[in-house]
Length: 532
Ligand SMILES: Nc1nc2c(ncn2[C@@H]2O[C@H](COP(=O)(O)OP(=O)(O)OP(=O)(O)O)[C@@H](O)[C@H]2O)c(=O)[nH]1
Image (tube, rainbow, N blue to C red):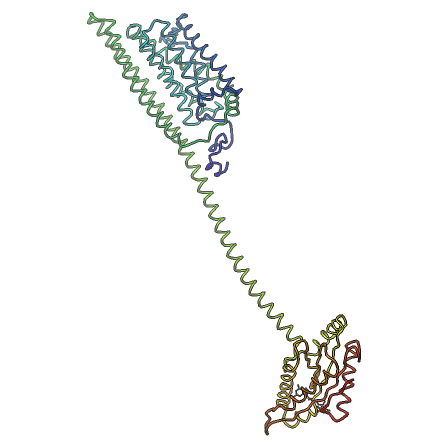
């Protein structure tokens, strides 16, 4: 049974006792008898009604047959054993279904019995309370402690015997009312009282005991099936308080009633004779001592029961507290672990995001390095070879011309030789600037070799391309590049133009055609542009 079930309070038989045989829980309320449509309620009506009738009949039979106080000699001492069959049935109903189920038949039978025996109605109403008082103690304590219903094991039998003894003593207080109402003398009163509680105790032990042993489990299972018990509630606390108060009240009432009625009996029996009065007084003293002995035993039994009760409850509470603490610790641990895992995951995610940015940047750098010329930062030859075929396919699909222009600087070696490589680089950078800014967004420039450049001009006619390249030549010629001994100016380049699809329909053919045109431009004096 989980703590959730405990907290939600769902009916589950016994939340504090997750497994094992059924236990005595709260009594079945009498109002279940109102559910007339319920077959279980009809069965209860039948059996309970029969019980009430049987109790009344048997009660009357007790008076008719003079069963109260059957003498029994044991160890030289006379005992009087009262046989009271209704109590047998009432004990069973009390334990199996609740105090009301046993107390009502017990009250009815005692009342009818007393009236039948001629007791005045006022006394009869009081007298009939004695057996229900004993049953109340029996049933309430059993339910408050929630004893197992199995009646197996030494401890449970000790508990049953002890409680049965107390219940019998309480139940026997009626004997004093009986003696007083029938004006019996003190000796008879104590004999009846003794027989009454001893008889109740013995018949409970010898006759109820075996029935309880054999039938309780089955009856409780039937009851739990027909009426699922509610979960244990804090109500048990006031049940405990009520039980304790009842026990104390019962003892006080017992003391008061016994001495009061005994004195009354003695006076009634010997109104004139002093000697007999003294004898009666002596008997009263002896009897008082006997009563104190009983009370001592009663007290010890209560201590035993109290100890059982508190050890049971403190044990249960400790177990529940420990289990809750364990669950709480476990939950805290799980929470901490989850938090830790969440933090680690967050850190890992952050690291991953940083790495992703780094990888993306590296990829970008690699792509740049792979496709750009490091000096001029124009595209390189590899990019040209990757892109030109794609551009030609697009031109083919959309049917527009593409011009490929090969540019080669004139006498560039002389620049290097005369001014040094740094100035040569500056010249290359200056031309790259002219090419980058002089073309449309759809065109691109690649550095083809050392001082060779290749332009790819989309959707342009050869004469337009010629015009464009000549403009570039003019801008290049107008550049001023700083050199060690002044400025370089009037620089020139030669160019050859090949056009798709006129001069070739693939990259190789176009490049070769443009190269040939360039060669012609060089051969024809440089600083000029030739069409393939
Ligand atoms: N500064 C510099 N020089 C380069 C670079 N790449 C190639 N060169 C030089 O470019 C020169 C090319 O010389 P040539 O092939 O003889 O051509 P040219 O001197 O321009 O003569 P023509 O092309 O016939 O007009 C060589 O001196 C190379 O060293 C570079 O990145 N930087």
